[in-house]
Length: 77
Image (tube, rainbow, N blue to C red; front, side):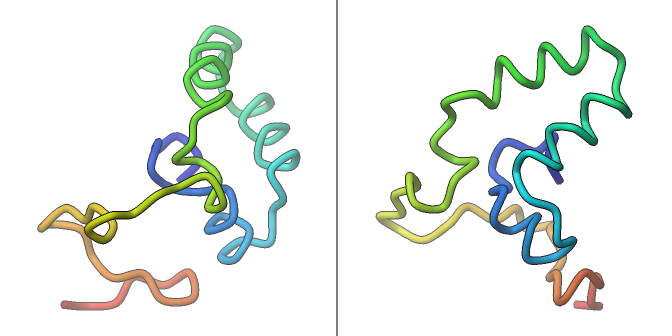
């Protein structure tokens, strides 16, 4: 979820209980150093990673193939 640009840190905290700093530390330990640097550069300052900075004029984007997520479980369509 952290790798995906549109998933907010608040959504990750809601589902998994990890704060932003904990997500960053997890990504640092689980990824190759070059991949982590690339992700950090991409995420840093990105408005879509923080709910308070996001602006939705016409609702949020959702892929037609994306499934519903309820309390950390993917439900059937």
